[in-house]
Amino acid sequence: MPTLPMPIDHTAIRAEFPLFEVRAGGRSLVFLDSAASTQQPSRVIETVAEYQRHQHANIHRAVYQLSQGATRRYEEARATVARFINAAEPAECLFTSGTTGSINLVAAAWGRANLQPGDEIILSILEHHSNIVPWQLAAEASGAQIKVIPINDAGELDLDAYRRLLSPRTRMVAVNHVSNALGTINPVQEIIAEAHAAGALALIDGAQWVAHGRTDVQALDADFYAFSGHKLYAPTGIGVLYGKRALLESMPPYQGGGDMIERVSFAGTTYAGLPSRFEAGTPNISGAIGLGAAIDWLSALDLEQVGVYEQALLAYATDRIAPIPGVEIKGRAAHKSGVISFVVNDPPMASLDVGTQLDLRGISVRTGHHCCQPLMERLGVSSTARASLALYNSRDDVDRLADALAEILEQNRHRAAARAGRLQADQDDLAPRLQVPDATMSAAPGQDMNLGAGMHLNQVAGAEPAYPAAAADSPQAAADAIAEDFALLPDWPTRHDYLIELGERLPPMPLALKTDANLVRGCQSTVYLAARRKPGSKAVIECLADSDAAIVRGLIALLQRICSGQSAESVLAFDVDGFFSRIGLDANLSLSRRNGLEAMVQRLKALARDT
Image 1 (cartoon, helix red, strand yellow):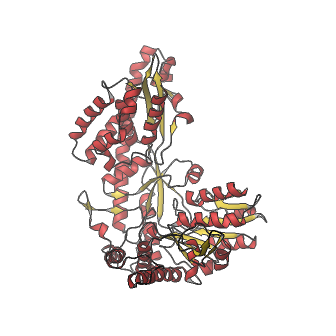
Image 2 (cartoon, one colour):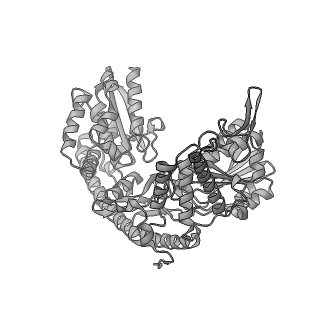
Image 3 (spheres, rainbow, N blue to C red):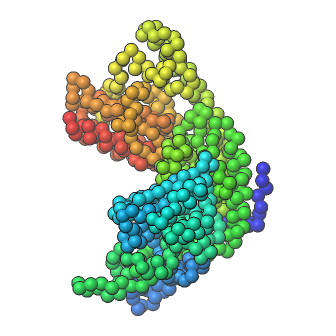
């Protein structure tokens, strides 16, 4: 395994981050989600706090000294940004809310002025949604078309296909410098040169690059370059859009309001010059100052040496994780940043469950589609678990992750074997009563709740699906009983185990009900919900549901106990969100976007309203 170079004092650097003083389960926190947001060093935190305590005032508009001082610090931060990315001048660096805000600005303002029907925009399949959706909006508004650069199986852009996509109709090429989902480092200088040769402009999403290597927008010849502070050891809600002066000056304003105007009258308005034209309203002053402090902190460390350290750590992490039985790394590009995305295939384990199990061990990773659903579809998965590295990570962090993964997967294999044994026993018991041939009843390990060629127990011989009956006299009574159980569970680990056990006993959902119509969207798990009015009693709601994630199956079991078999009126009246807060699950599980539970509740209530 590679030896980590130590041109920097990693121990001293890690000590600058207050978060790592926190203990998780008696051990130091292993934070491996820096591709989503880096932690902030004390210098950044203290700089922002000092400004808020003693220097805060609105900028650009007042003559008193406090405002003048705040204005000076805000513009000094802009100058710091310009030096950091080697912009020709600070005015080419616009402060925005982040990479998403920057790309939306270009797509809306530049797109409105330049795109026409028949024009083409080239994106790549590696893009984050924030570099897809704004361009889709621009294309819809203008009549332009979007073309997509494919990737090979290693997660690298197909540059030959890119060149074939370029045409006299190409107006913009917008790609990321580094893939947030796979870590692929794209050859952006070559991509920009090819775009320019075709007469097109190029926008680079640099969110995942700027903290890990030197950025020179003039050497790249980028027309636009966007990045966020919160992936650069700075606060959230602040970002930068670099644009060549001539391009920015040719664009109409993105938003109207204070500070972006020269003169306003009802007869007409003239706009301020750069950069004010694109910074309407009161900006995120403290965020910009914090971004400047973060850049100063990082620049003092020598970004080239930072890159060397992180690349060696990535190699070590790959060598530790790749051999773990059952793990498949997605994205094996020759040039990668510090991102390892993986799935568990043998036996299958949902990424959400992997992330939850790691969290119980004090290890923070990201799970889900990472706002890259087209890429996930290309990879043939719904989600991955992603470990992303930063300067404060070490081999010890990697060892903790690898050892925990090996332990989790071994437990998963034992659980899958036990589940297969229970399934076979259930099938052996059911076969004589249904008089189904033994060959039909056989099931391989991993065919969870299936019979033979994909049949469920309650599908045999045309059996009616077994919707759960009411667990109590009312949803409130069912909830009270559940709450009594949870009151006996002292902490999240015991509650987690309890939910997993509930999920194991979840009534089976027939495969015939697992349709697109019953699919519930959640960014980290696949959920199916079949809900109906009970035959013969249309005022009663019944439901069956299932998920690929064990933890979500446990939540489904709770939801079924509360709602299935209950009157539509009582389902509508019950506060499901309040109940999950009551039993303390809101502190550990996102009950909405992450696992689709909120969408399930809304479907059930919509059905109840229609009764």
